[in-house]
Image 1: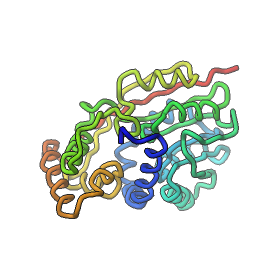
Image 2: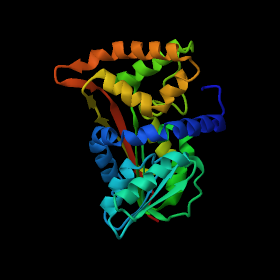
Image 3: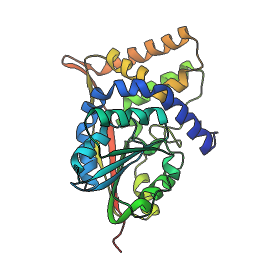
Length: 287
């Protein structure tokens, strides 16, 4: 992927999420349980409260969008955007099913949203910014959309050593696909924004002040490694992209190898996959 242009990366990302949208949506209960504390910290970091208008970038199937909608209440609203029309349709349906009429969806590239300037009180992006080949452009879009004094907060994965399950998945997939090892920080990849200090620098370059980053442990708890792989196989599009060119037998061999390595995180009380997230936040200066 490192030799691809930003537009090629976006096209591949859009296609992958179009394919995995249904699987990701079906996994919403597991995703919500996994990320609930980190999501709450992100919403706190963006100072989201009743009556606000909030921008949710790369919203996916809208698990966190519903949390935002409930927090801002009937006097507020949330605009959920995503590059994939299919996954965003699930966000709209999930909001309707939850009886939340303060949610709007709009298909759009986070780097080119072109929203009205100073039209939102807060902006968030949960585990989406790292898929942007040029994340600075997305942060500039968020900055432009915020009112002076508004806050932005994003969650991304931290360094590879703190997210070993992702490392196992990616290295095993690459090996079985006959592809060379990749720079874990390459643009558009799962860990692309995990390098220490990088997010802070991007926030500041986009114009934000009062920039801070904190680390949040986000272990994924499931009964077994097999359950984790079931989650990955139905919803983790980057891994599916790597294995997509293999025949069925070769894909199964890759999954079996992943399962063997992931057994290291099995405990008497279940499977606990370590994950660490970075929560970065900043403010558009008041004029």
